[in-house]
Length: 393
Ligand code: P1T
Image 1 (spheres, protein in one colour):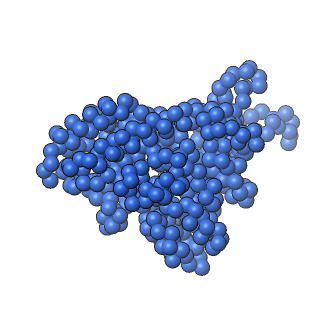
Image 2 (cartoon, rainbow, N blue to C red):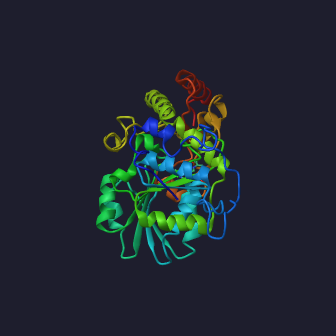
Image 3 (cartoon, rainbow, N blue to C red):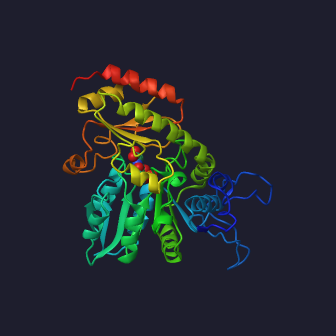
């Protein structure tokens, strides 16, 4: 686990993104942190080494990434993982058999799968609630509850959790509050300031931003959590390799400028889509018609690049994803290139159909990850795809 310095936290976001956690290499002056592609470190003598013993435990490239991510989230400690789900896996390993978790009912399908198909078998129990309503989170608390876990905005319904309200419940009832901040990124939202204990990322997405690796991260300020999660990182070993850490570190340098463009294009596309009669609903927190738009304005500094659309039927969804030319049909999100996905059959296929239907995750829903291509090109691509898909069912 790597720790931020006061120096790292002194600057504005764009400056931290480029400089925090990394200094020119002392031996050569290389401005980029080297990729320490090594499994082990030679020790001077028994019990005497330079702070690095074995690369599962520590790696200097990973240290730099962990410090950088912690500085971006405004936390003291960062921990990098082999994937976003490896980070979630570590968070759940903070608990013991018999413990209960309250989870937002809309989370990434793989998060739901990990909870229900892996950790439930090991003795944890889960209640999935509509976390748009903080009251429902509080009502679900039992004597065994230890953790509240939410995504905000959620994947793919773009629902929000009131971070201050749930943060206050978690503090009062002594529960760990975990927030998956993958969709918003720290550029637009910093959950630690609202009382979250742990911020989780799939760094695969916006933080890396170039769709060329898979990774995860946790950021926190509490010493006890940093110590235990650092222990778990080494004990269970789901660590990212140095090359992937380096790619993520290169990605975060441009996070601020990329997020500004994702956000600007998504706002424009969402407003345009919302006017079209052949699009039944647009889910985007930046739209004044989004039912939690006011909350978005209170706890977010922008709305990001993810939009979901209701097209009314599986057939129309199929035609639109088949007709786009620039948007690529693929899982994942947050890269510079625009992607289109069908959550019901792709990212959320492992969520039981009844649960999907109940939250509006229908077979007619498609999800856009708006990239940073020219906005007009993206708009024209969607326009021709919707026109070719027609109005029919
Ligand atoms: O894929 P991985 O790096 O393991 O991250 C899992 C994860 C965690 N949290 C959120 C909000 C996510 O969206 C994801 C991964 N999501 C996709 C692959 C997707 O296309 O939605």
